[in-house]
Length: 302
Length: 235
Ligand SMILES: Nc1ncnc2c1ncn2[C@@H]1O[C@H](COP(=O)(O)OP(=O)(O)OP(=O)(O)O)[C@@H](O)[C@H]1O
Ligand SMILES: [Mg+2]
Image 1 (tube, each protein chain N blue to C red):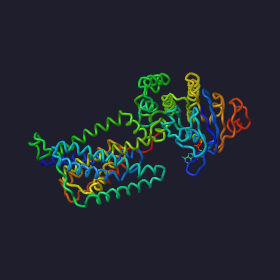
Image 2: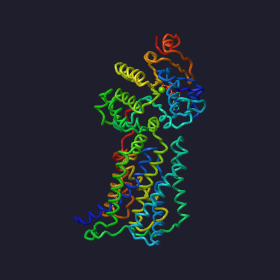
Image 3: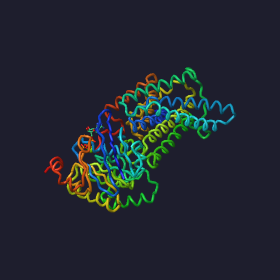
Image 4: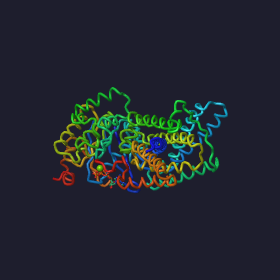
């Protein structure tokens, strides 16, 4: 067995999986709180990538160095995406909170189509080159044929983000409010949680994570267009369902499982069927665990 | 302290409260009895703003609260032990208690109150790191009451705290209700199916039928009222 090739695929899968996980968290957190599949979430990721592209171009023109551009462009993208996520919820979902469950779902699909076309019109349908902002790390030289600097940074950034998110959910006031709201919304109201604020916060956090994913993957792959949100969105949604939608560790695990499946299957079998492997895996796991790998069945003792 | 005037509440097009008037003074234990579907739970949810009334007025300590959001109403000092306990199933016992004190800022006070509750209910102390959903029904009821107390409410709303509990536990819980009332001077609005028991601890009572208040009187008078006896006391 060619171990070097194996590790290359393993780390490649981890990189992909990290990005899927970052986006999947947005799906799963929103679903956990309001039981809505936010189809517009992929577009928020795409908008994050576009914002970073524009910001990076402007900052580079101003003569900043690579690292400063990366950091600043990411911050701008995060703020911008968060603002979009916040606004989408207020416009498209909040007015429908009492409506039948299908209504906000349709509204979400509408939002997704609207945002795609808005970026298409405001920008272009062509792929735009994205500057490779992630610096080459010198100490990585000896193992650069197995894992690139960009991949290392993607994996590390994702790990740090996940740890921060876990701490936020577990220990902060807003984190507790989010968990309580997810478990019983009207009871959360009865102990004084401002549920509207919790829902907004959830969208803001999910969107910010998607923006981080957007910046990382765009600077890794090197080009973006208005459609990347759709593909990444479907994959990340698959990851969220795989792991058990509503479960935060599930989204991370689902992302990794999906990343590895794609990486190994394309590496050892064939790269023509990349997407087939992802969805075949989804079908297989859902047959054996309908609630996803870490999903819990909805029945609970009241 | 609390005054409902001509309150009407709806679920979609269903008119669950058809214009009710209720008045509660500070320090009282008031009970609300009525058959299934009479609108008791809806009354409590309307007071808390979870089912905001479509008509009428609710005053709490002189302030109109019928258009306030639930979190602001809680902040004014009303908390609820809801029907079916509604423990957060995946939060630990301690986290559930913390949630009860969600709007309080006095960390030391919260800690002290949790200790007090663990003295009052040693079984909860034993289970403090266990998920709320894994407690037994009686333990959950104790936790639900404790969680409501953690807010240090001025007015405590309780929806059928005796539901599904063994007689011994029920007696214990009613003992605690009286204790809260006399020691903390917390006003209590108690919804009960168990009219006999409720009328024994309460000062006054209201009887509800089909979305309307049909009777209100001192608890003792209701206990001897023929209509109440027949319909709710099973005599
Ligand atoms: N979420 C809801 N949607 C629609 N109708 C509801 C809802 N909740 C209650 N109702 C209706 O409103 C009326 C009053 O219900 P409510 O729960 O207030 O009764 P209750 O007096 O608390 O009854 P119980 O003793 O069984 O708890 C009932 O006719 C009920 O069917
Ligand atoms: Mg009821």
